[in-house]
Image (tube, rainbow, N blue to C red):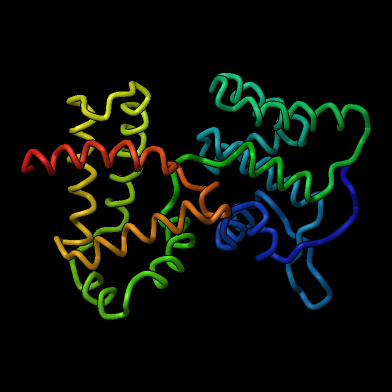
Length: 260
């Protein structure tokens, strides 16, 4: 049972769920969700459609391709309660890091079982807290960082950087992998271990692909990340925190002192 309260435009629905409008169109084209239509043929998302999007994003966060999600939604995973049950089991497997997410899901299932209703705000919170991936797509990186880049770089510096060969997809993949490796090394606690210094070298190399030794570009990069961590809306979506940057910085400083 879902509250029949408000209807959201595609842009507002996308914003609340932390996805792009393009993603909503893809889900619609695949037949996974069918938005409502106004008399003027404008798309709109009400509680039922938002619940459906939660199911899609929850299953997608488990690593399922859209074709498999479509098959599941036609079968036993066709209700919000069913997807919450699948999602609950997956989150259990991930351990204590997701205890907060599990609490939200259990509370939602209890409310549904008791015949209570979930509002759009309930569903958007549930989706954001339980389906956010640690790995960001190119589009997500661009959405978050483009405003910060425009703020911290002069137009001539951006023009200089954009003129260099740069495969964004490969670079994003390399950063995502490096972030995961760095977090694993940081958990061991020693920023000067052989593993940590190797992380620092890889980190410097990736930064260097963009800055090419230009101090102005390097300074702008530091400011961009500082602003990203200072913005709660951006920081909560980042796969890393300021603590990881501080950890890697210690290793980079040690390499600099050693002349590397």
